[in-house]
Image 1 (cartoon, rainbow, N blue to C red):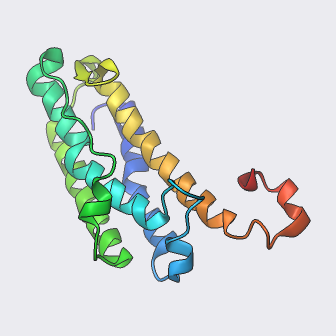
Image 2 (cartoon, rainbow, N blue to C red; image 1 turned 60 degrees about the vertical axis):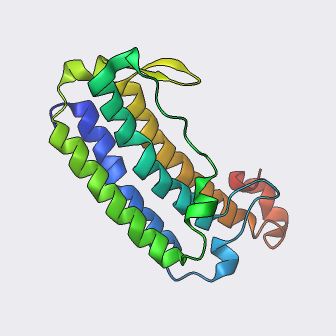
Length: 174
């Protein structure tokens, strides 16, 4: 990497697969299929979503910016694709697939040898309008962190009733 910003992003992006693997692999389904209610995602669904993002979002969008700039809008991201793509796969299979996809994405990112000036190149998001490479990479990084938080929060809320009065001291329950 050629910039501290890229190094910071890669430091987090590299760890996400192992973090989720350590947290989820081998757990009973009651933990990995739990949700926070109707219309929310389980840890299993989150991992499928992260795989779909690796395949269709971050690096593909980066390559669009590098090739076309803001002259070509990104393809629309299918936020529900994981329900179709993950069907019939075990969580362990998804965790392995996510780790492999992420390694490939980071290898591609490194091979681009982005220079500091390229972080300010602009692309066109179909809903948000103009964005920069820096914003795309920062969003990829914080997207990971948000989903790690989501998985942890969803799991913690399984015990909302069991913790009894301590729930008021546990911010994750609110």
